[in-house]
Length: 487
Image (cartoon, rainbow, N blue to C red):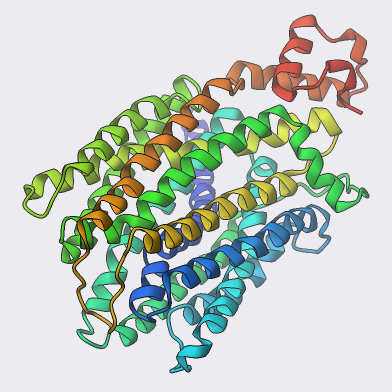
C-alpha cells in the first residue's frame, strides 16, 4: 500500500512538473503581447514623437505580415521533420530571435526622425516573425501531449497562471523601470526592453525540455493554402473564431487605451502601474475559480459572471473624473480583471478540442494549422484595433507631446472620445462574445462521444454502424453531414 502511494505521488509530482515546464512558455506569450498593447503605441507617439496615424500604420502592416506568416507557420509546423520533433525544434532555436527583436523595439540608436517609421516598421515585423516562430508550435503541442478533456483544461490553467503572472510584471514593472531614469526616458525604455527580452527568451529552453510529441503523424501533401481555407468548413472553428476575436478585441481596447484614459481623462498617470496591477492581480486570483467552473460546467460558462463584472466596470469608468475617489478607480480595475480573466481562459481552453473536431472531418491531426489560424486572427484583430485606435485618437483631436515627458491638456471633446473608445466599444464586443459562446456546442460528454467515434473509425469501424446520436453530435460540432465526414 505504501509503495502504491509513493508511486502515485511520484506520478503526480512528475505530471505537475511537466505542467510547469509547459506552462512557462506563456511568460512570453502573455507578457510580451500585453506589454506591447499597453505601451508600444504610446511609446511611438509620446517618446519617439511619431504621428499617431503613422504609428497605427506600423501596427497594421505588422498584422498584415502576420496574415501571411502565421498560417504558413502552422502548416510548416505540421510538416516539419527533425530529431527534436515537429514542434519542439522551434522552442530550441527561437530564443535568440526573441531576445534580439524585443530589445530593438525599445531603442532607436539616435536614428534621424525621418527614418523612424521605417526603423520601427522593420523591428516590429522582426518581432512578429519571432513571436510566430515559437507561439504557433507552442499553441499546437498540447493536444498531442494530453488527450483528456479535463486534463487539457488543467494544463491550460497552469499555462495561464504563468501568462497572467507575466502580464502583471508587464503591466507594473516597465513603467517603474522607465520612471527610475527620470528625464532620461529613452534610456529607461532601452533598459526595460533588454530586461524583458531576457525574461521572454530564456523559458523556451525549459519548454523544450518539458514537452513531448507523438512520433508518428500523417503528413498532408495538400496545397498549404487549401489546408488553411478548409479550416473554415469546421463549424466549431467558425464559432471559436467569433468568440476569440470578439473577446480579445474588447481586451485590446482596454489595454491600449488604459494609459490614455488614466493620463487624459482622470489625470492620474503616476498611478498607472498600481491601477493596472490591481486589474492583473484580480485576473490571477479569480483564474482558479474560473478553471473550476469550466471543469464543472462548460468551458464557456465562466464568461457570464466575468463579463457582467466587466460591463459594470466599463459603465462606471464613463463617469470617473480627476476628482473621483481613488477607491473607485481601483474598483473599476478590479472588476475589469474578472472580465479579462475569462477572456484569456476560455479561448485557449477551447482551442485544443477544435483539432479533435477537425480529425473526424479530415482523418488528420492538424493542430498547427488551427493554431496558426487562431494566432493570425488574434494578431490581425489586435493590429486592426490598434491601428483603428491610432486613427481615432487623431480624429477626436488627441494632442501628442512636442517633447518627451510633456503633459498636454486635452479638450473636453477629446476626453469624451477617449471614454467612448475605452468603455462603450468594448461593451459591444463583450456582447458579441456572449452571442457566439451561446452557439458553441462542445461539452465534456460530447467530447467523449467524439473521441470514441474517432477511435472506432481508426480501428476500421464502418460509418454506417454509427449510432444516430453520434451522427447528430458530429454534425452539430462539424457543421457537416456525418456521411461526408472521415473522408
